[in-house]
Length: 181
Image (cartoon, rainbow, N blue to C red; front, top):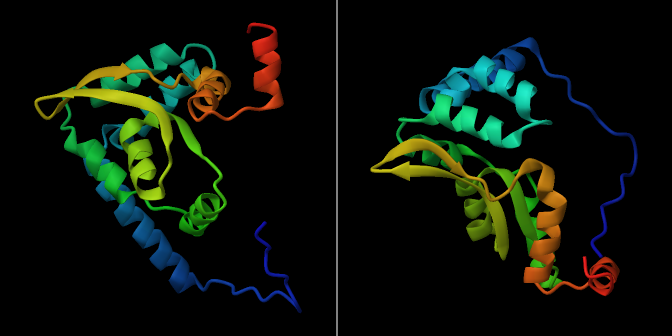
C-alpha cells in the first residue's frame, strides 16, 4: 500500500496576485480559442449544453445523435485528433498506474466519451480493457454517426463485462452466476 507523506508544521498558502491571475486567464482564453477552432462542440457550447440538459438522463441515444449529427457531422476527423492530443493527464496519473502495474492490479476504462481519448489512455497507461463510443468517420470527415459502445446509463453492466473479460472473480460475480443472472 502506498503511503501519503505526512504534513508537518503549518501549511503555507501562496495567494495569487492580480497580474498572475490575469496571465492565467489569458492562457485559458488562448487555449479555449484554439480548442474552439478545432471543436464544433466548443464553437457552439450552448447547443451542446442544451442537448445534454434535454437528453442525458432520459435518452442517451438521442443525445449522441444530436451532438454527432448536428455539431460534428461533416467536420474533419482531424479535429478530434487535435482535441485528444491537447488533453493533459492530471498530476500523479503515471505514478498511480505504475503502482497498479507493479502490484498486478488490473484496470479498465468505461467512458461515454470518444474512444480516441480512451484508446490514447490505454496505450500510454497500459490499461488492458477499454469501452468507449466511436465517432464514425470516412474519407477524413466525421459522418455524424456514433457506434455507442458505452451507454451512459449502463456503465455498471459494462464494468461487470470487463471484469469477466479480465477474469476478475468477486463475490458478486459468483452470486450472479449461482442465480443465473
